[in-house]
Length: 262
Length: 262
Image 1 (spheres, chains in turn purple, yellow):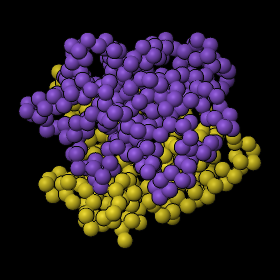
Image 2 (tube, rainbow over the protein chains, first blue to last red; image 1 turned 135 degrees about the horizontal axis):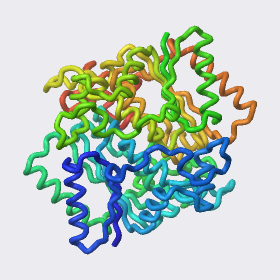
Image 3 (cartoon, chains in turn blue, brown; image 1 turned 180 degrees about the vertical axis):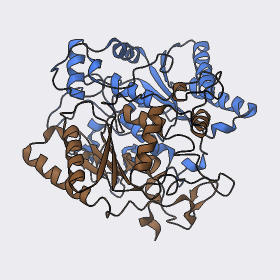
Image 4 (cartoon, rainbow over the protein chains, first blue to last red; image 1 turned 60 degrees about the horizontal axis):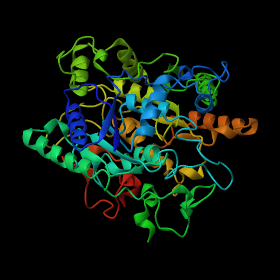
């Protein structure tokens, strides 16, 4: 199978750098083809702007989504964006690997999403009408592919627990797992997490690698997070709210997982 | 009073551009001093990397937080970072204004946070021991200052409601409001939100401006979001979990607001 790793850490000799190298090796040993978008090494252009199109729709007014659509439709996207889109289309599975900085991804990876996720490619796909709000959340160009986050944090496990001060890690990652990965159609696997990175000795590093190796072996069989499909009948359209008869007592991120259906 | 607006939109003639201009004018008319960090106009360097220090701690290994600490402590931070830190220290209130892209801030603003929020400035402040985990979440260098988000979205209000498909807006913004603003000590005001930006006609634009003007008039009196202080007795340290006797039935972001105390 084909695996794309999108990786954002500025230091190759870091824990993240080691885990990235391990991941590539482990997947290749298992016979998979691997491509890495090492954003720092590529000096990825982080900021979405008018230079992302080779030709402008209207040189006097830059509209982030309309200009993106125009460039995508007419083949005028910047070549670095096209290359990343081709990697995504090539991949059967995509891993986004990054250290958690300020409870989100580093800016360079956010800039990868902002720029590569073009209108017509990752959003604005499919019919948009009063009864259909496009192919997204479970449908879209990435449907049939799998995605997984690999995230490291300085804070402890308990700080990210259900009542931890930072908020539960699954909620902190919801805008990424649901909003960035599930949105264009990926099946999203539970994240691979490493907490308290300042305290990784040899013994812990060995066990982290073993656990990661197992997750990579299971990449094709792990049960995805059961997010609800937008167009599967669970949501009212166009309000896009969960049907009142489904989990009527619940609100928040958790209602968008089907476990809470009964 | 002194107000800093950190603003991220690539098009001055956009709705965001108009609302930024309105905000500056309105605050100045009320006698306040306003500075704007217009990140696109400044061509803000978005990516945190080794070039953010004028002198390296160890040229063979870049460690994002230790290098940040070293540069901050020794006066070796890049001048663009120092200028933004000085603006933050000058400000009595800070407004972060941006369009919601992929359920978070544009990369250029994330890069402002990643780079300006240095170790020793916005984190790693105060005593760190078994009984005290620094001055953060309600304490820190920004204590006594107010902060507010101004956010625009293409999606509808209902899509961001309690059972809306994108998740509730207050939860989507929690990593920013709690994790980026409350963390270094800001009192965080409820956000100013504009939904469905593709449908803003003259009448709606007028009412948006009126509502925004009122929020700006109330900047010094609006009740902040009642996030719980880390060191106020509500959390177990060092686990950093909410005390078991407080709102024992609750989990998730909501437990960190004191409304749920009783």
